Image 1 (cartoon, helix red, strand yellow):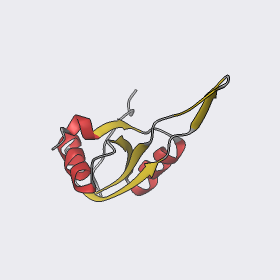
Image 2 (image 1 turned 135 degrees about the vertical axis):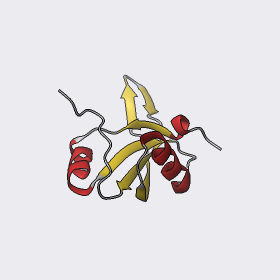
Image 3 (image 1 turned 90 degrees about the horizontal axis):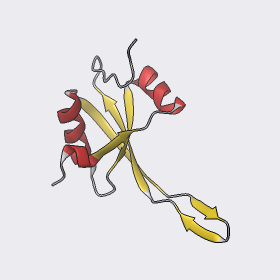
Image 4 (image 1 turned 90 degrees about the vertical axis):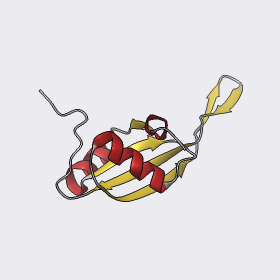
Length: 96
């Protein structure tokens, strides 16, 4: 069993993520690769005190990178798109 802060690594703030948040009441997170949808749902509900209606996940491959003659690769990671119940909100960078 994972701890909530181990499952939810960080929010992914991008143009697409902001559009999803504004239009469809969805949030995008980087999550632990070993976490399943039900664990992600419980973690988001506990951390942000909201009701989750749907969780979609994507396994993302790390990009190949090169430094001079050395070739490497960034780590693989998992992305979760969370749909919240109508009326629920999570404000990350709202303010001023």
